[in-house]
Image 1: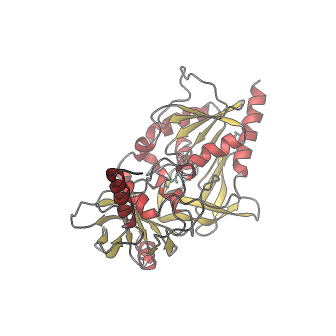
Image 2: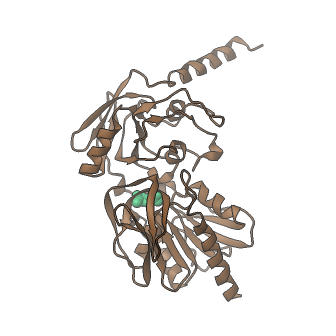
Image 3: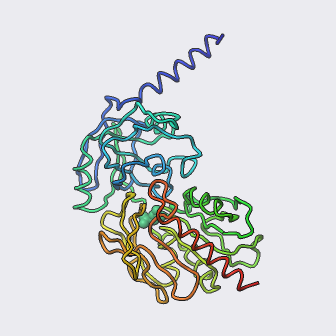
Length: 378
Ligand SMILES: NC(=O)CC[C@H](N)C(=O)O
């Protein structure tokens, strides 16, 4: 028998959760920096937030996208019209231990999920993590507006107004990177993973291939004399914001390239590697966010369907590197490879989550290059 207090607590929990099984009647507004407004109903945390509004055209993957640290400071708009219908899986399926996106905008929120892995409805999760979310009914208009005018600062507000805030003006990488060195897996080959906000599936992908992974903070100098562990290659992770804000990582990568250490970069890691090697980056008009971005492999007719989530891109290529992949939609750079060293990087996500696993082979290629180099050193 439950005592009265426990019963009341349980009932209160049920009532609190029941409030988010559908968007409430509480109105909120998404305000863009140019004054454009999109009114909607709240289904998340009812507090204001400011950031940059971006859109993702993937049909699935909201749990992975929300927990991807690369979305830090961004209000994510999902263009697929039904969001929430498969609920929220347990934390082992997330890309980090919490939601990183600043806010969520959807067309239709479904608070009655149906999925074998669902542990709670999306609204409950957003409220627990204090992430505001609005159902604005017409995400098409918003998306077309962003495509026309470019990515913009934005805020979700209720009664209380707050100023706009530009997430690119901060070093977001320092905010989401691991504070300490951590180890995963137990293989004979060790990959040092520079955590700029790494998605968990990068570690999972390397460990599944028999590697030991040592995760280090964004500003960790792997070329310093006193590094207390040995490693055979470096993977530079994805992460939030403008790559030029992570100067310390760029400096450290420059030394690692000089030492000819095998390196693989993913997304932000690709941009950081390009900057370290003397290339340059720029901000795209509205970025690439989806699980169906076509990327052409250089010197072939092969086109890979990839998962992406980025605003910046590599413009000027560094000397000694060649373009490896190119986006078939807009011709922007999607990958680089060094002309003779075992160093390469991609703008898309070979670890996917969510999305196609068509480019997972890049992890195999990297470990192959690491093994070859290791063999040459022995
Ligand atoms: N997913 C990422 O690593 C994103 C990289 C970078 N923050 C960008 O927006 O371009």
